[in-house]
Length: 253
Image (tube, rainbow, N blue to C red; front, side, top):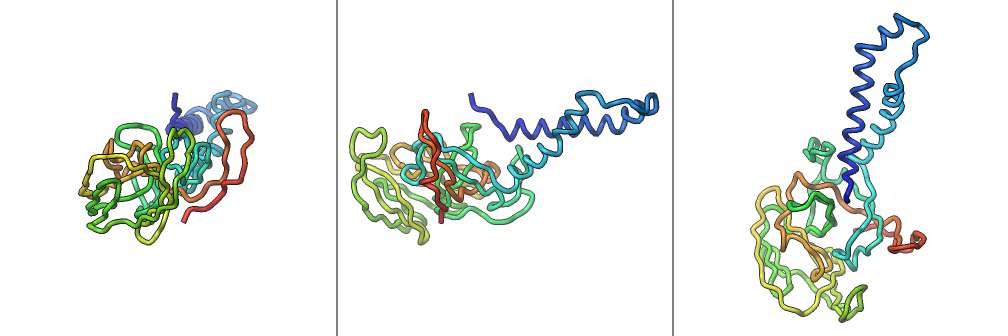
């Protein structure tokens, strides 16, 4: 079962704040008037103790940065299962926690960014690469991307044996807007698709093109679903009983 930690944290902070405020406005003065040595009820003591700490955590998670762990192979070879990434939640503007409404403009997603967001079909966080921006026309033809009529650059690196692959796959460096990133794709057939990206929508694809559930299957990401921009790998832990390591630490361009 997936736990929506930001949602839970938001409501815990809100409840603690309300308990503390209501007690201060309506009950504390009466308790002290009746007994100058009276102590606060246990629930009020807990609310007062947890509120400032949890509020600080909520602010940091909502507006600055937050860590996430990669659960699937959809972004291989860029991101491996077990990578812990740091997400800059300030890069695309300040947003209200839980609701996702942007309250301060800072910047917009750019082609090639690695972005965390909530897809239209699933309440969980997804991480994919931004390929199409509002106003773009994107075509995916014979596993080659064209953005506004321009073919992206592809440089073959070679064949690799990826984890859980029965056969070899091809590794390419795909270049979009002057920035290169590694992708996996094989030579099998895939139907062509074309998208006219409307306002406040983004076309998101995984770097592991043949093992990624992305905009080709469930549609476009929306502006109000954006969580933030992935900026670094800060830790890696292999699945199972293993120690975390720092041998994959790096910043993304």
